[in-house]
Image (cartoon, rainbow, N blue to C red; front, side):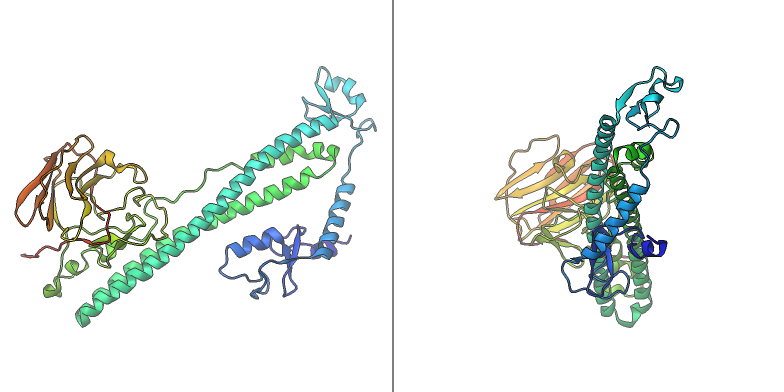
Length: 459
């Protein structure tokens, strides 16, 4: 077959002979796997060549093109048939295990193969095919896992974009309330937001691009190896070592993971926003000592736009990033404390099932948080103080409206107080290590709110 005709049988995506060719309504043909991979990376089903959007749910098989390609492949295989010994002209019926190559019966008795071990060609081919297939199956499983991770990364990239859009809307809302005094400040903060969005979106695009390249490399290796497996035994054994080396050069990588810090830091942009611009609009300043971090919130929680109020809500589809709490309907503060004193008040007037306290940063957030959690718990009328090293007895219960959480990290003391009556409810003493994050758990749809403090600024 002429070389020009062979080029016409090449897929425009992988530039190799068509494998399971399919045809679109625009008359362009592609390998089925190439087209599916292309569509996986696109939002619409478009032709990779002319970009025309296809209305077909499934591309149709191009039978005529498939027959031409299969004929070409058979001709290539026949032309490469090498089942005769180049030295003795005898059939290659044996396989030398020491030299890992086919030989004839005369080669077996030659000095070159003295004391070597031999197997019949068919038996050796079966064994090597088995080993190669086993490695190939592991590569296919790796590729399958990569496809699943690629989908998760794509969903995370979409969530980052939604976070950026949501945060931008809230930033604009606050700046609109501050009118012309805040025009310059607004531009600075939106620029920072867009820079972070671009940076983190670029990181995700880079990860997805790297994953796509790895997937394409694995696909090429798998396709080439499968082609080698279809050749006759002798031809296979003559060329099996390069094929095996090519497969073994493909490392079975661990499944890519989403690293901490991949999501937008909404708390950095929204937390204490009005306080940070107090010098321009002092009368409108509102400062909350703890800002909740939506990247840590359980999917079953709903946070207010200013990230100070939390309540139980409808479960959302959120990325399973490492920072997010998994087993408890809880959320953490955006800032961890490793020294000094911190104090914040929580409005629990409407809550009947809640926990307030602090959580160690080192705790595995997808597991049992109680190994590093100190908190005050109200559950169905029973009030308890709970810690990893202490079994609490029920505390006296009265009407509670505001709970004050007071942390003295250096002295190793956590106090929980009735802020209205200014009376201590319970306290913990412990030598804290690492960072501690404010912790809130709620089991009802009624909100818990971190209260702002009165701001007095003196220079």
